Length: 205
Image: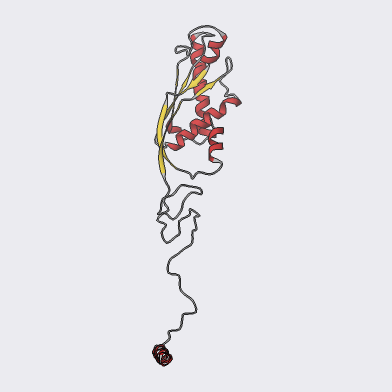
């Protein structure tokens, strides 16, 4: 009797399955979300709200880079040889740093101040300090492409010594072109941590 019941139940189940229409599967399934990552920031294009990201930038879930404000200051100091207004080769790096600073702040002006040591008479030193200031300004404008309208020059002869005595050390420090302290802030992209991050940080110290 049990076997007869089992056979009847099985028959009913099979008959019910046979009455259901079988839906064929599609050969291919269309991907509706863009899973590519063209800017390689780790966020798929379907979720990426910032289309281009700097390589290795730290990003949020929407693919937008993290940013931080950096405050910086700069003060030019270019040294000169005795009785010379020629910019020495070893001083060009300081002027290039000033040019880089000015490019980050294109609205800012700069005042180039020329000075001389106490050696020589006042009239000669005044002219020498003028030539020194103009020499540095000329490098900024003609070699480093800084707009001449952003550069002002002033000269003071030996009237504003950095070190007020007649020693060789004082004379060397006083033969100079400087700028007043410059400051500004800019926004930079925060970069992702890598195995080299700590090494680079240590090397920059």
